[in-house]
Amino acid sequence: MPQVSIQIANRTYELACGDGEEARVHELAAYVDEKVSELRLQLPPATPEVKLLVFAALLLAEESREARGIAKAAETARATATDSADTLATALEELITARVDKMQKKVSGAA
Image (cartoon, rainbow, N blue to C red; front, side, top):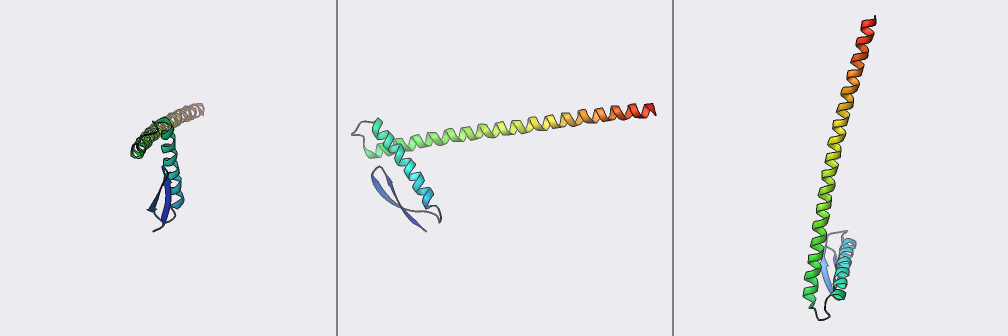
């Protein structure tokens, strides 16, 4: 199992990760470190590191929740669009069938 060395809030952490996941772990750690750095600028200088990390975790949890909400709304919209497309296709099929039937009756009646 590969080992990665990441830095968050000026501390280095050694972690194990899955094969091929090293770059992703570094990317995620950089994102967490970015959030901690942003918070460090917004909070009083004496804010304990553990509080910075807790606030960062809460911000990331909020982002995750919002993203899940957006994904759910998108899935609902897709399902609605699919239902609407199916309804439209059925209506068009019925209209075409009715027109063809009407035309066949006219041709049959004229013959």
